[in-house]
Length: 132
Image 1 (cartoon, rainbow, N blue to C red):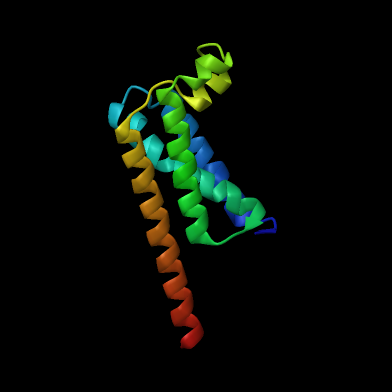
Image 2 (spheres, rainbow, N blue to C red):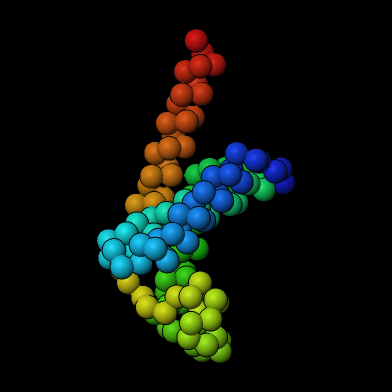
């Protein structure tokens, strides 16, 4: 891993963050978008955020983000936010979450799979342009 700022990933991070805010506020009553699409997007948001500041192997990063997401989801199963002492409705309570769901883990997996496909396509395209 190497530290290096990437403006392209910063813009993508801001765009994805604003999308998540939009989902949490304006689109909160549309169940599919709030419950599923938000979880797919959040792993992509984590990826772009980390890539904003580092050069890191994409596959290792994607696996790491999936593991991190599963650990957070598992923490929700054990109500960690409450046990740590965060009040319901507080920012950290919301960030950590409060309800475990296998479907959330499936959504994280879908988000990571999308990332993997994008990375593989980008690398394949790059390989074609350097050979041609």
